[in-house]
Length: 301
Image 1 (cartoon, one colour):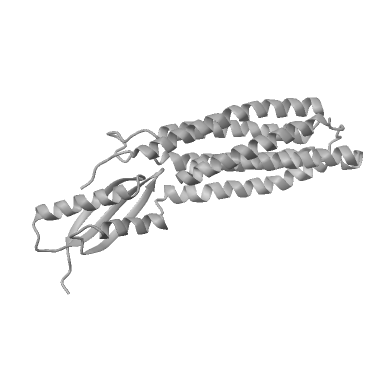
Image 2 (cartoon, helix red, strand yellow; image 1 turned 135 degrees about the vertical axis):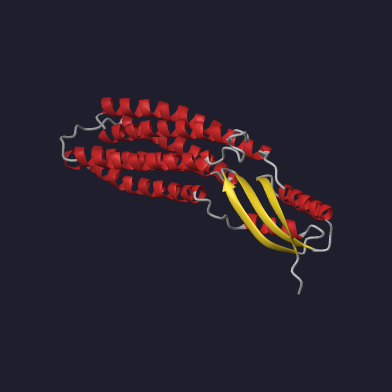
């Protein structure tokens, strides 16, 4: 017995995540323009490179916004289990953007390292300081929400903001050294950028791993597993839990459960027990979208 549904809290979380991605998109567009313009007029290679990284952030925000909106769609005839897989797919795409951004920034920094450097303008530091404050605030808020919603895509969006923070800090340090150290230290921002590329790459891997687990239907661990078994076992008439299979679909969980009941009861009674088990499990956690219960006669000792 089963039924397709889309729990309201899950849909709300996906819609909220999409709104956060839209806010991030607007901020990234603004910062990309400000960074590139500031870098050009302020003779700061690091700021230009950081601005190009923000351009990729814009693409990432668009993908996350669209992906979460798509994942929030309810089940339909062609997608009876909903559209939740769009959520980890979005995270995988964003991880790719982060890794490409890190590689592009490293190549650009290495390419310009030994070129003649003009003295950067001091106002570029103010731009970077503003970016760090705004993006770190956004990172903390989005990450907190992503973890509470257990959304890989929303967490991926948060880590993109942190990557931007680190790249901006590197640019800030490099430009500061170039300003204070004179001609011999003009390439400091390039070295700082290359170091941050390694850190950003680690963020990309961090985003990619759990998203791949979700796509491959890796069995979840932790509280949700114990909660399902405890809820089912609490129903009168359930003799034993024979098998419990759980898979994550976006922000929702789908449960396949094999339970043992007294082999002498009627089919109707077994059906009522199955209904009660399903209801108990779904009431235990609103993220559980559907439960398929298979009834088996209890093994005689």
